[in-house]
Length: 253
Ligand SMILES: Nc1ncnc2c1ncn2[C@@H]1O[C@H](COP(=O)(O)OP(=O)(O)OP(=O)(O)O)[C@@H](O)[C@H]1O
Ligand SMILES: [Mg+2]
Image (cartoon, rainbow, N blue to C red; front, top):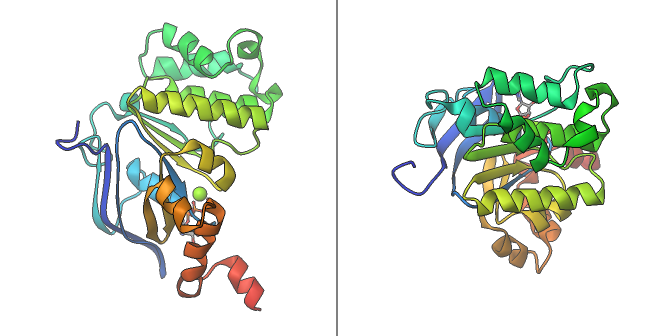
């Protein structure tokens, strides 16, 4: 894969926007067959990090390797990396199936990939014939997932895939993600839902401009005396004064 066993490696990555330092000296690696949760408060730099990983933004400093190449230089990236970042890109009138057919054609994938992706996310049958504008939140999340899985990618990146899902949808997504990792894929999930993350991931990266923690979920939970939430707030509160957040600023005012 990469010459070592890492699917993704960030090394000393920094990024600023004007005077604002969004990422500072970020280093961590992702291993195949593991689900990693990317956690951090609003504005922590999670989406910026994902954009850098996808070659949509360039770091000021540091290096990134994705599946053995620099982001943007990976041959066949659209087939090897599956991304569900938000619902942008879905038109209201076409059906669920139509959206996937268009995406499959753009990637020159065989038509049976559409059926496979529909089955994988539980949208086969009547749901596939539903227009996007008539889809429930859960169906939209599943369509975004299906789009990510369409090319049968090695690396799956999901930004907030659990938002708006009911408990059954969350449990279902958890099983899907476990299954993807068991097949040897690398999965990265950015999320704010700590309780759900606790049940879904093997490893955790807690980001707030810099990496505050990277390691197995169990190690972080142990730091919090058995609670991911307690461990998370210990980390976040410790650096609140140095980085600042809208919430801590407000509570000081
Ligand atoms: N294109 C940009 N131009 C200027 N500032 C930006 C840009 N993109 C991000 N930022 C800033 O960088 C910081 C990190 O933003 P980012 O979107 O990466 O955070 P996030 O962790 O994804 O937050 P959220 O949980 O709210 O999605 C924020 O302060 C944001 O305002
Ligand atoms: Mg974000």
